[in-house]
Amino acid sequence: MGSVETKKANVLLLGGGAVGAIAALNIEAGGLGAVTVVCRSNFKVVNEEGYIIESVDHGKFKGWKPTKGPLSPPSSLKQTLTNFIVVNTVPDIAKDGLPPYDYILTVTKNCPDIPPSLESLIAPAVTPGHTIIVMIQNGLNIEKAMFAAFPTNIVLSGVSMIDSHEGKLGEILHEEHDSLYIGAFHNPNIADEAKENEEAKKFIEIYNKAGKSTVEFSEDDAFARWRKLIFNAVLNPLCAILALDDAKIRLTGSAIEGLVRPAMKEVFATAHKLGHNLPEDIMDKMIHCDPLDLYLKPSMQCDLEKGNYMEYEYLVGEPLREAEKAGVPAPTLKIIYEICKALQWRIKVERGFISIPPKRVL
Image: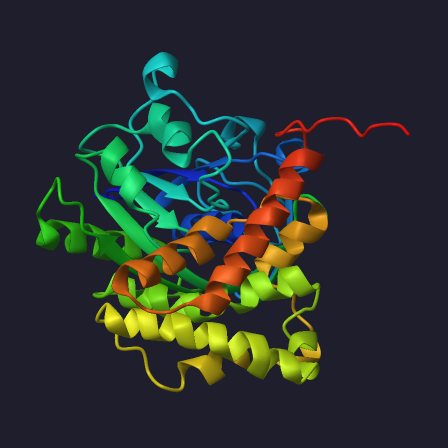
């Protein structure tokens, strides 16, 4: 008698860029999930030609797409068109008569000041009380809008430590090991932390099955997020503002002690005031987290250079607001936030999101 094939989890992944493509590849490599990827700017390329991926964990792929079947190995990339699951809009499961998604992964930039909202985007694909939402996104308090929109759904937190970039559309260069911390955002409407933690561990099993990544259960999700904010609320925006990558900003000498460290101390102090006891050496670790000779550009710098919107509200704005509520002085963080806000306004004008009066001709 043959073995019974395990039913694969039905996964929808919103955001088929550098991080999302690797997540889709990893889930399908493990064989426990079938992934539908929602692509936006790179949809045409990925839909017609597939991804070109060079991954430190998975190897090289040309023409890879997520499929309904098992992952094709790099040496045999034969996949039938009927198996491709790449779309450019979020499926409406009721309208399209689709089975419910077990998981929806959000792996996009999260800009609450730019409509439509993330929760409104995924709403047509969410089955109340069933679909588990996994937010593999940066920043603080990102879960609150999800709780309000989907009060009966479990929402998981994903803190990703990965170096993956999309140069040309559909071309992914993944240079550092895929390390992911998964925990549960505890939904006050559900009030069942044991169940939420259990579901987090089930998702870890799906993501870890391929044996190519390192996924850990995070009992204290807030700690993991504040830890990453030491970098993301400070070096990430400052590199964008100054147009200096994370090596050049160190080589300037004065920028670290005059800008970076004071802002990091403000984030560190806020975290401690709220009960998240980050280690004392975390600031030095984040300043020197990347080898100097790689000259890596953080995500906000890449976005600004491309004229894309920056996700500064959850990365800088929310830590600042938490500092203000806790009575922690954060003057450097305040300046960083206001500059980011002004830069975002400029991008909105350039992209036609905001109209301004025409220049008067003298």
